[in-house]
Image 1: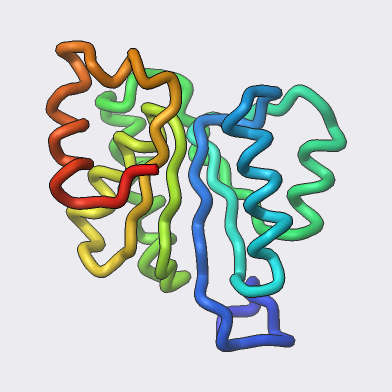
Image 2 (image 1 turned 180 degrees about the vertical axis):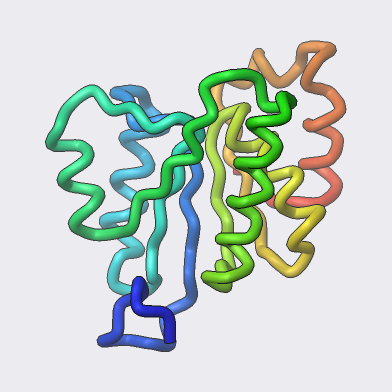
Length: 153
């Protein structure tokens, strides 16, 4: 058993909640509500594309209930440095046997697209926010993939 998981209930599935950052927006508030509801049933991880938060209490509240992972990608997703970080993240997901990946917002959803390719067994849930953004020419490719291969909330 992996020492980072909750030893009191080893049968809990591992769930990764993936978001761009921990700010004050609506997606972040929903993340906190989901963590509150799922904490007893699942071993939870929170991953941020670029870890930043607006209040110290946000970090403290989340870190007491789940593990926080920072990809530390502040530049484009398609630079060499970012790709290496994403590949290390995929390795982490395989190692921790993450069963469910729930992502919010464009950058985390885009990275989740690649995770699904490299870890096809993962159950992927993609939540779209700012729906007008999803109908731009640049995002149609990803939107079509999401529609065909994942659950969209």
